[in-house]
Image (cartoon, rainbow, N blue to C red; front, side, top):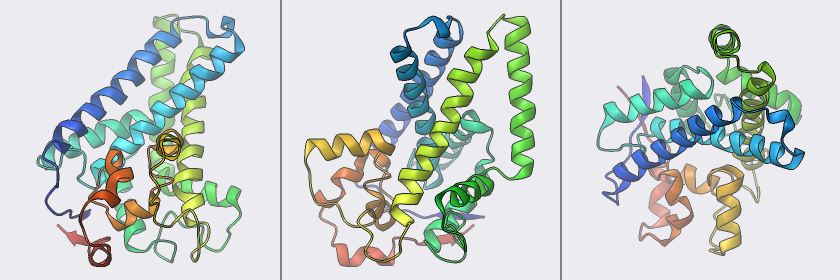
Length: 265
């Protein structure tokens, strides 16, 4: 199986920060879900309903970001077993996705970015709609889609018939955020940074440190949109450290040699 091999962490606190980010995102996802499915959401003022859906979408994206860091062994870097367990949990909650398949795809993306062999690249048809469909198909193959539909049907049926939960609530605060999250991950994390191979302003070093850009980077896609170049150059860096990556004393010219280093285990 292919996996990323990261050098020794510069910060010993990464284990704790990774665990805390997992607890925070999964905890907020569960608490918000339980709260919102048990109230008549259609009776909320429309602005609060929209904010609730967007907030749930952002937390859903966070689940995949957690799994993504796990695929790089960045979530709990000193405990590979716990790292993979938490990554499996996150990607399962996200959409019952197979963790090993996602990691295999993501490893290929780093080894062959924006070229043949990259499952995230658009291939021969670059139109955003077709590219998005291909992106979903790569991570949601038919078998995974069937597993997702079966599991969600069982969960929804149980909640509707045994817990008297509104199906509308489940669709608005679970399925709609999942769709929005997939669009967010695609647009900010794949389309913008990889839509053109050369002279792409969304795939270049970010040296500015303004509060606005750091905030926007976090809100748009947990730093993986605006700091996507940094992620490819420094794949051993967890998502919350990407804005600070240029402040570290690692010579830039040395890093391309290890940027996509993979080993077979």
